[in-house]
Length: 368
Image (cartoon, rainbow, N blue to C red; front, top):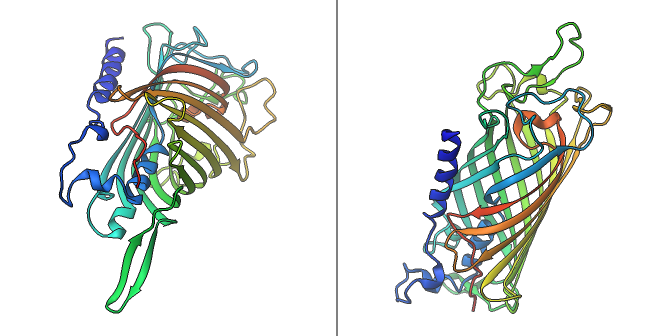
């Protein structure tokens, strides 16, 4: 229990380390300073990368329940005492390594490479309040702006000159390439068999099963910013390919073959606005996932285990007061395979509320 409290306090500490509100920066001159940059398309693009990222959050007493009767019940340490958990925490951190700054060439402003870490866990209400095995993702992302309707080149005698027009509602097309390792860091072993005399009746071991994969994710995002309403709309389509094998350093557990899925299509729509009041930012987001390919070995932990449950959907609403440096408040709902690593054969729906945490909080840009 003490370890759990420490993790919770650590997350809150990160929230207090957020950057200052850009709107409070002093207006001083110089091409290395932020204020002139905030009125350009590059600032909008870089804020759009922040807006379209996954949120860090702490859900308080989240409700996570199987959609039907489980074929093999949960054990102590897996959440058997209640469909409510104490907390669910997701920490999504991106550390910029190259570019994506206020100064430099057009190419440097349009591109950003980051080192990424994402960790997710739940704290159960079982005896001694243990944590579920955490989801850990680590790797690199490359964000780039492919085109927008505000920058263009004008031919001159001594070469081409980059100009930025004053389009009322800027539009842009971004691309992201991400390579991540995803694991729960457990010792070897995958399945839980409650009765050794019936080895054909098994499920994934949510308590100590070893989950590991690696993936490449490619995403295209079409966005538009409506200046009058200070509203940012972003629609994304993505494809994810999981790679690796049992024999390599970048492992993909043999037990996951034709069960977890190596190919996925993803879609999301992210909307942020200040139109209902200047003191708050309203954020709505919908995410969809569909698993492709052969899933002949997938067996959901349900009495009826014939379906493959390829589809998942998540929705979130966030209210972020502008005078809160790093914290917002959210409600979310989810349906599909459990998104905590090896629990993917548990088909659930969840509802939760809590606080969002941000090291780089989104604020609407002030374009010319």
